[in-house]
Length: 162
Image (cartoon, rainbow, N blue to C red; front, side, top):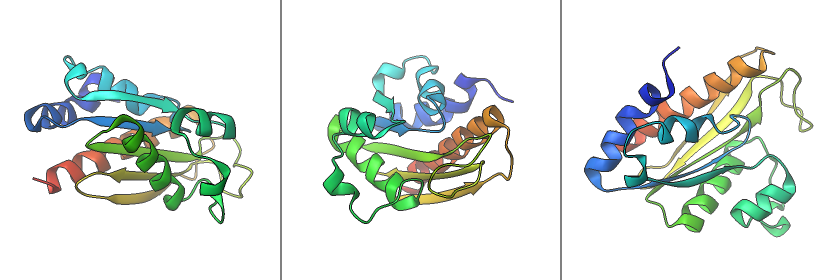
């Protein structure tokens, strides 16, 4: 498994080169996406901030998402990941943002998703979302898979925006 700074190095270099920045809204990764970016030397040139939104109160407090914005929307979906990413992007005035939501394990979540399920969205000049299903109940392993998938998606979006 690569080290945190290695995971975020290419993204950091791209963002610095383009003078762009990023905000992160994560849940089941528990901060690993942010940690990979902050581990890059000179991260203050591109990393604006982020948060781990794990509950309804943190969703509202960290990203300003109120219940009216949740009407008809189920957490742990790509649409919800987009909502989180857009809220963080707006809150921080970021060029890019990532939203991640899911069930790391060892059990599924209350919305019916199995352990190893995550939805990841990137917003910015290019916008994409993916769903990851590991089929695993290993909480920490799932967190690493989700964070790696989020960073890979982010890097591909940044490169596509070139």
